[in-house]
Image (cartoon, rainbow, N blue to C red; front, top):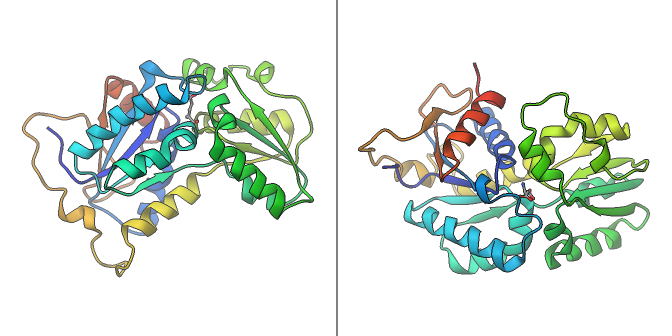
Length: 276
Ligand code: DGL
């Protein structure tokens, strides 16, 4: 039903659509076209942030088997929680490149001041996150790092999607940070509310992921050459898949929405990011 060989994006729900959008902007700016993208949001089992590591791995692994059957060129874990908990195990198991998103603690700490990190409970508790925090503190000893596990924020953002008047202030930790790290892709939807609440800037990992993804796909290749995925992405579909033209694309890039929540994510993507 779906063409093979595209780039897969995974998130527990709608958060990863922000990552997909950032990657499409990045590709567009560099004239990378004719690419197939898949988006798998596991919305009906989200939020993941309060689940056990075992449960999160089992859900993500199930979805990655599907990516493997699609012979994806690469998979993006557009979910800080899934990256923190299972990126390494997935890399051991699957043959394609896996690019994970991490809270942008290092660039935030580089600027000094008091840095707030908002992330899910599972992300904050993970070994990967603890190592990243330790590394950041060693590198930038003058900056102050404050980590806040947010138990319900991602779930509430998913529920309130599209409600511009929703008030998140009761769910945000109090204080006067210099910069806030959005350590969950869901939080990017309420960037403005968070910036207004604290009166400071925010930072996320989407730009870094876009660069990393296309660097990996073009590795060792002239940037004018077609990347690997274009050569294996032409299997015709036999029935009508859920497709929407990729943002701003004058050529044939397409997004295929997968999973039980594919209609939800397609609609939300179109609402938020597609050019009308
Ligand atoms: N969007 C996800 C993240 O970046 C997870 C949200 C959740 O399901 O708890 O961490």
